[in-house]
Image 1: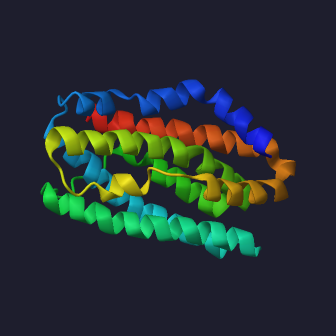
Image 2 (image 1 turned 90 degrees about the horizontal axis):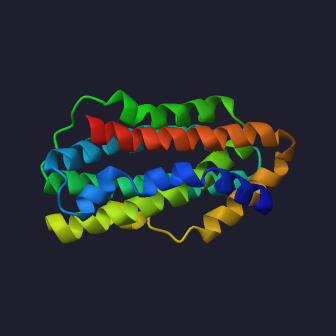
Length: 206
């Protein structure tokens, strides 16, 4: 299953590069990104992480095996900590929650679909394809906010900066169990990355 994961990541290279090198991130690294865009990022993430937690809890509740429970519990624990750190960031830069930006929050609504209709293998591959890309984008964006905007509470971004070896090992074992659905897994992985790119586009274009 490791080879299958490598194959999907290879096919998603161009899409993932668009995320990691998004204009939103580049402008932050150049110190040119308007603070309102940063506030939009934070407000939309508060919406997203709150809903992601609920979707991950549904995934855990539908799990049949201990390793599946461990995997989703690990992700829930991470997102719970992320939400606490995100609120500190929101307080620092004085974010008031704005209306949801449809393009930006589509990701979490897709995660809710996965939670209710996909099997744990499809859920696991979507998440493990997404998390390292999201993590690298977070690392760069967080560093830019610290260096160019003197923002102190960047713990949210640091939490997602990796490494991801352990969680990937957990995911691969789950994927192996559901390998009769490889075509569905591939669709789920590619869709979640499309929704990830929509998030960055949504913040940037709003």
